[in-house]
Image (tube, rainbow, N blue to C red; front, side, top):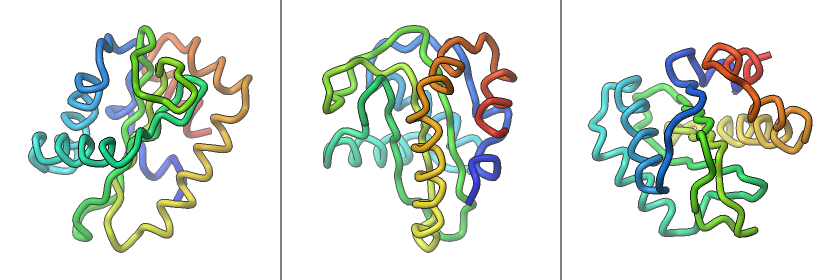
Length: 147
């Protein structure tokens, strides 16, 4: 499963005003719910439940929220570049400004791991991360993420 199959232009947003972990998870759930035709509150509660297990803030200002969805639905993702960092309970204590959320059907968990591996490899590249943080438009971000 490639990043380009998970994202579309409507689910990649730059310079999003983010003020809290709860607020950014609400924004992510709204975007994903619209794409999937699901209830926003249900997705939001799933994201919160996942965060209660352990923060998906992986360090270096990055969070990778992820939840399982019904097997009848397609896998999808939402990418947000926040205007400024927010507290996300990351293991390194740094504020998060890059969020890549993945919603994956229960029967595709193995393919989800491949997508997570691909985005993780990209996000380990400091130059790529700088490009993401300096992107000024949704289009720039989408091109960077899907090239």
